[in-house]
Each structure stands twice: as C-alpha cells, then as structure tokens.
Length: 139
Image 1 (tube, one colour):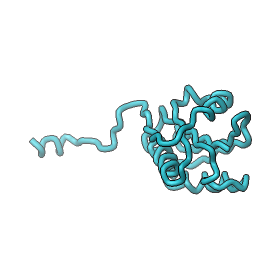
Image 2 (cartoon, one colour):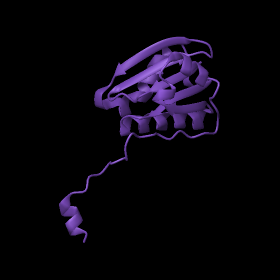
Image 3 (cartoon, rainbow, N blue to C red):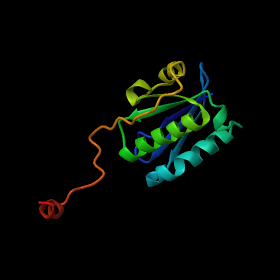
C-alpha cells in the first residue's frame, strides 16, 4: 500500500491509500490550525481503519507544494521521519503532478528510498517580520 499525503490546502489534511493500480480509500480531515499537531495522529487513525501499520507501507507520496509554509513543512518532516526511521520509500512532487488518481498511481512506481523531501513554497518563507524599530535599533 502507498499513502498519499496532501496538506497544500490551508487547514486540511487529505490522505489516500493506493495500490499500484487503484485508489483504496480517501479521507479529508478539516484541521484548521492544528495540522502540525494532528498529522501523525490522523495518519495513524486512517491506516488503522484498514488494519495497516505505518511500517508496512511500500511508500509515501507527498504533495510538496505550493501551499502553506507550515503545512508543507510538517508533511515533509513527518514523511522524512517515517522514511528514515522505518525504511519507507518516498516520492514528492508539486500538486500539479499529483492532482488526479491516475497521476498518483503513476507516482507509486517512482517512490525511492534514501531521498529527503523538501517543501516547495509558493513564495519566500517569511517566518519572522522585521519591525522598523528592530531595524533602527540594529543600526
């Protein structure tokens, strides 16, 4: 089985299970601002509905962007951690390459071990905002 993870839509976790030939199940979790907290738990619950343990996955396919900075970063971090600790193969691509079931099924043949997924943000990451006061104080 292959797990598909898409967190590119703000506040949503979209998970699907695929074999190399078809989609098995689909689930969307409306998480609001809790995706970073809930993603591992939601994955575990989704897989348990099919009596699948994470370590038995053949691969994880992740939408790497564009989308929310935090959501994409968390999805890639979770997938990378599972891959490195459990030896699960990965594949990541922009949403435009994973926006249909047929494209995701094709991606099942592209998963590979030993890679690290990197999010592709739709703009420069801006996690801090400089105030004019801090700029003046640093001069």
